[in-house]
Length: 442
Image (tube, rainbow, N blue to C red):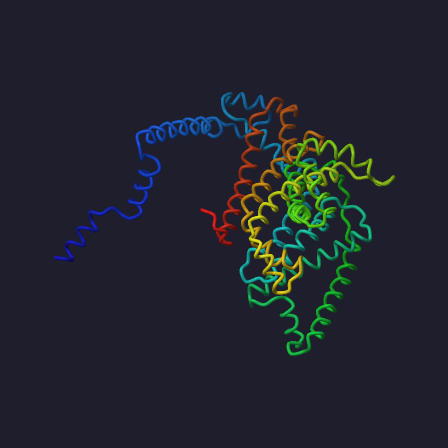
């Protein structure tokens, strides 16, 4: 009898997932008459919007045509995506020589290879890998993108970048397969496991020196054709400016925030003045000032091109905004954490780097990523001062003779690109919050 009752109950009761879904809808969408009406009106507006976008952008759209007039001949009411498709290379790469596009693709591939170890759980020394990505990858990628003759300093930095990339890759493979680090693997490989620590250190330094010399000799004969920065553009230029800005803004913001909280009056006043100066003016003003005022402060004969000036301006501007975010995060840490670090014998920088910043940065993840997203979108302002970033290339489509007057489709395509990039950054931010257990509500 009990069995029959259980079976009848199971047959009558709805599945748990269905009950949960219905309960969620009743609680959040139809909890009252007003909420029910609001839900219905909102769904109706969404339906109308999606329907019109579908008809204009998909159903009636023209995907293949030689010019805008050809789009009108096929369908005058639909979107003319043929113009966007014809300009895809320019949207992504700007006016970069088409036969040299492999350099941009290789640079992106090397960045992915460099950063993959940061997401592998068994790989050690991730902080060191991240630091080499920030401080060495730009030299290797910069030479790939610009080319030309290498100075001695550039040869040294490119050599260091190649050696670090190779070491990080081998280190990651060893970590995934064995759980060990590259130094541990080399020490075991050369039979120095039980040797004194000094001998092990000399072995590792010797391997590093041999690697640097070998790579330096190799790269001396490696040259690629020079590509002027005036030919950089499209999404590539946008990512270069925003990527360098993101990589440098956080460490710069941390230093400015610590300077503003310093007990030394000179350091505190200089940091505060610097932060407030850049925060009190819009980015477009900073960009105009950078392209007109920077040359006045440089030594005679020393010239920076407009792209470098813009990158410096973007880095300084966003470092000042991040400084206030970092300062707010530092203020959430109780004073006892500082005192605990001093109690166990740690100095100021050890306390900050080992105890304070790791806790503060966890609480600042949403604000930091929000600032990075804003930086990515703000880089479109460089089109006003003559750089052909992705927005500049999208606007150029409407001035191309075959596609004269094509405005809406390029801008819609650009909006979708920015949405996908910013949405991915936002989702990764939420992933970091969950992984680091910051205590935020998800």
